[in-house]
Structures are given as C-alpha cells and as structure tokens.
Length: 318
Image (cartoon, rainbow, N blue to C red; front, side, top):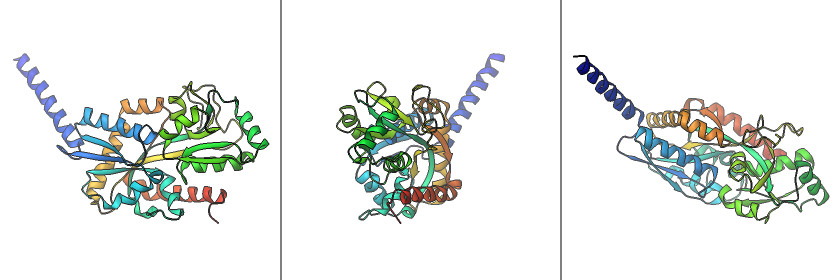
C-alpha cells in the first residue's frame, strides 16, 4: 500500500509539474518569432538565443530567433507595427537607440511607435583597443587623442546608439575629439577592432569579456570591476562619474491586446529570473534588470529625459 501511495504521489507531482509548465507557456503548441534588429553574434542576438534555448528546454515554448539587421536597428523598428498583433512576433528593442534614432532625418519610426513590454538587462559601456595596440592604458589613449584631435577613431554599433552617445560622453568628459565609425552591429566591428583597422571601439562589457586576449579593455562603465577582467578599472575609478550602457528588451505591435502583452511581459520576466540564465549572463558581463509592462511608462520617461540630455550635451540637438 505504501508503494502504491508513493507512486500516486509521484504521478500527482508529475501531473502538477506538467500543468505548471503549460501555464507558464504563453502559447502552447505555437512558435514565437523573435526578431533581432542586428546581425548575428552581437549582444542582442546572443541573449535572444539564450532565452530561446531556455524557453524550449524548460518550458516547452518554442522560439525562433530571426536577424533582421538594417539602419542600426531602425529597419526592424519601423516595421514593428506591421507585424501580426497576436503575440507570436516579438522584436528586440534597445535604449537609447529607440529614443535617439528618430532624431535623424529619414528614420521611419518615432519613439512612441515602439511598444516595449519588458526590459531585461543592460550592458555597461567599455572602451577597448586591440591587444596589439600601442595604447596600454586609458591615460595612453587619452594622451594620443589629445595630441591629434580628430585622428583617433572609435568603432561602435550604429548611429544615435548607446555606443555613439558613449563616445560623445567620453569626448566631453576628458576634453578630446575622436572620429566615430558606425558599424551595423557589435558583431560586425570585432574584426576591424582586432585587426586595428580602427584605433579602438566603444562597445560593451560582454564583448570585452568574450574577446579577452584579443582586445585590451581600458575602462568600463560599471559600478565595480568585473571578476572576468579584474585589472580593468571603472570610469568612476578614473574620476569620471559614468555608469551606463545599452538597455535591451522586447516589444510588440501597439495593437496587441493588453492581456497578450501582459502574458508576454510575465513570460520574459520568468525567463530572466531563471537561475541558469541569470548566472550565465552575469558571468558574461550583463547586468540584469526587471522592467515589466506595469513599470514601462515611468521607465521610458526617465530614459527619454536622460538620452535627450546626452544628445544635447553632444551637440546633436539644441
């Protein structure tokens, strides 16, 4: 009798687990198309594939990641509201990109067109040079830039992006002038950085960790040093009050019913809180945040004011 009771308990537990997994799935038996507006191998793409893998493995919710790069993300964002509003298509969104890109002439979307439902992390800015670069320290880089104003080049992902703003912030903070070279995405600039086709890059901490040994990181915009790069100082240590980077999340068409938006926001929050993905991302240099649908208006208001202030300080707007 005890054996039978034990088996019943096991079957009951398995049944409850199955019910829990089905409940966690936003769309059982269907596949979510996850559009990333940048080329493969960048931070947005990397995390989307982590999320898709976890979603399928742990919750049996299938996701397929599709890269639709163009105009530094603007191509996909301008098409966001043309996708079906059934929750089965989500698009990666980035801040400050979706705030600042509409300032450019010819961009086919406005910030208010982008319906973000969840933000899951940010990546601290990182100033990098090739491992073969003559610049051994942050001070070496600044000295070279001051010696030849406008001659030192820094690669970055897209115009009017976090990388672009970070370069302008660096210029102002230390009184230098550098040439910003925009690439389609983080993954596209690695070869140029390592091969010294550019003098350096303003990228993100995950790239600096991933390419450790091939690049030399001079400073990071984090609260503290990262265990993977213990010898790399923060900008704050160098006397610059700078803790910032690119925020990433997901958006859906504005016409998507609110219950579906909430369901997706809750699901991405679930993925983001998973211990497995949390450790993987933090070890890789990502700083996790939890900005659900309910907090989105206040978050966007705060980040919009900050991004516009950066653009004004950089002389991009009056």
